[in-house]
Image (cartoon, rainbow, N blue to C red; front, side, top):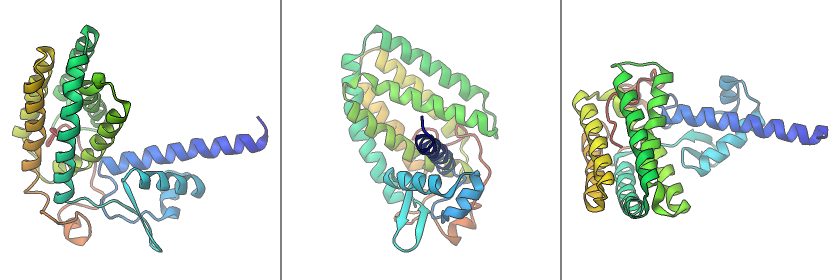
Length: 260
């Protein structure tokens, strides 16, 4: 590899690092909706050069997590109740289709993987106290997405799985916000029971019941968030910052609105 190729490779690796770290902080609520992402400041925050950071922000913009405003630069994408309602509605449409096809196509190996994934999620859930460190929170997020994606895994469409994965990532932002301003122990335990019911319906190959449970799983969390997010109101700016600190400390993503 010549020096030019090595330099290009190093920039790409740094861009990947910047993308992953900024994305994680957006999803976990450490970068708040509406926050300005000044390239020099972001570069200093992560200790990564300006060029890789700019590339990472452009990529996050295409993923819908960052907004690029003409003549103003990059900002963390805003969120609102209207957007969440649309997100949940679309997730129910697409994931119900994927879940139905996955149950139809799933074999014994899929069932075994699903059971194992559920137990990993449940074990992580039991280990998380009212307030947990970043490492355990990220483990729960990993296990949670792993379980939900495995439910859909045998649908037979990589395109459909890709869309569902992207929407799950968007939903994490709402869950992170809700757990910081509206803790709910009852919802936490309810979501754990809902995961178990979903597993059982899939193992029983009851696609109709599984889809109804999935829809209820998401709608229950949606209703719980109405008191946190005003309909039609973007979560950004001083009004929200007074209620939720602009860079509030990360808490366990499993502690509250787990259903989304």
